[in-house]
Image (cartoon, rainbow, N blue to C red; front, side, top):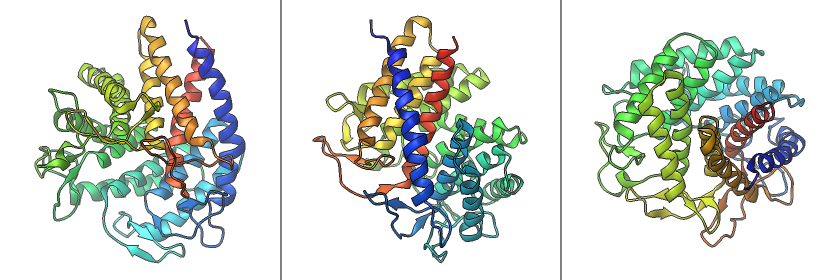
Length: 391
């Protein structure tokens, strides 16, 4: 019988060294714009920064990555990276309303002031981790999070739960921004900063269980009409295995905290769907897209869904009966091997983003946006490994 616990331990040792010795020092040195401030969008394949417009979603993701690195024990100057990043983000992306604009130039010129619920969700997520770190800017992050959440509720609340995509409302409505609002609310809940975050988590969980999930098949849809029904046409049939795994992880966390049997069972079903239909067994990777009949829509594999596979497998293993744990640990190991194929770069600390159906990787600059996924998965892995070692 394969000793997956030992295999996972060995891989965790390698991944910790990769993260602490290679990736974090590289992104600290090259991934921060020393002249203009803020985090760069991409590094080229030699590790040099590119001067490109900056999406709002990337800045709080990078803030989180450095804060979480510090929490994991990395001794680099994560505090300065996080606090400087927060100050720059507030100065350049945040409007008086509390909402954030979508895109700015490297020197801070607003290039796209449009509202995107996805960006607001990651802003709340980044604020939560700064607040939890108890560093310079923590009080500011807490105040701004309260302000932003109140703004969203006042201007974008959907009458059936969740939030609109615009004001006036526009379609399609999306499950993906709500997934990250769910993630942010659970992060705030951990620091016990008022019950508004627990109420938001409960609202989104209810929306997911009642609207996002097809109760006949267990499929998790991406796009919806104005009444939270499936979006008409092909758009309404789209599924993403990476999000299926990510929702599985989040719903299991919420379900366990609330002792909500339906959420726990739904999370398990999502994990099963992700494994059965979302993993290309030939390449050993999670693909990007399915249709609602579970046929493959997009065979390209990106790095980030591999990290969600790992996280979902970990929480399933942690809460499995002893007789089932080995099977889940096998999935943790498979997810790690998939992730490592994307980390195999000439410059250690970089990664590849896309693998084509034939197994070839796309040669392109390295997106900073992926670091959040990697750090979150490795944080869960190191915690799991520590718990296993202490048994």
